[in-house]
Length: 363
Ligand SMILES: [Zn+2]
Image (cartoon, helix red, strand yellow):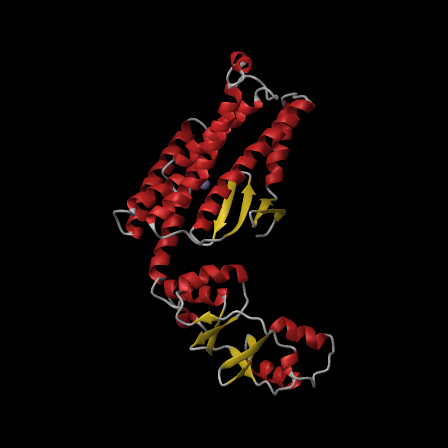
């Protein structure tokens, strides 16, 4: 994703932070300065906010690791000023698994809150001196505030509306009895009802609630659209979307001959093959690089080909392939029927196919 800073990896999942996050930190500093806050006070505020986002990361990690248990990888976890997003490659279709993945996030915050509670409950003097949420942040009040933040995270996510976890829990519970699309539609309606409540409450109390309302409204609609498309495209396989736009070349061809075939046919990728059996692949960038460097074009094309390549089965489910190829944007893969090449496929190719199926040809 663009405009993000890579923070490293957690359990093999990339952790990123969006650049707008820096606005949040600057805003906190600005706000505190205008209140005449001390440097120490500001440092505590920043430390606290970063700690809360640390808990958000653990929350997202909860979703990601639960999904991994069901064989669903997570592309990355990104932090935004309004929260975190874990990009799971798909969501489990079985209601029970979806329920587990949805609950795993908030469950982490419940555990953190309980641990913090046990921690400061043992400090009797601390509890006696605590004047609930009135004390400034300090070493003594920090655990209490962090516990409160975790409870707020749990409550916020318990709202039964997409894109909050509560919406997914609701859908999972409904789809134990109803078809998934219908369950999603009902969950969407309930979510939009809550969105309306937020917008109205926002008019009277706090404009920020209105913002959440709109966020929930569109989140609910997007979720429904996603599932609707998903169901609609379920019958399709890779064969339906693949293209023939590849250039077959022979193992005997020189690089020069192969390049000539390639540029005369407007193909996307060069496939070195014999009777449908693939020996290697030559992709556009390596051809262009080879020409640019002015290398010897009389050598065999086999010296330039990539012998390590992935192939995709023509009868594989299209939705599944779409999710899989999302990470390998714009790269073409050979599609095989009985170990022989029958076409090529890429993420953008499938997307094009799905868009055409959905909207039709528009003249
Ligand atoms: Zn969550």
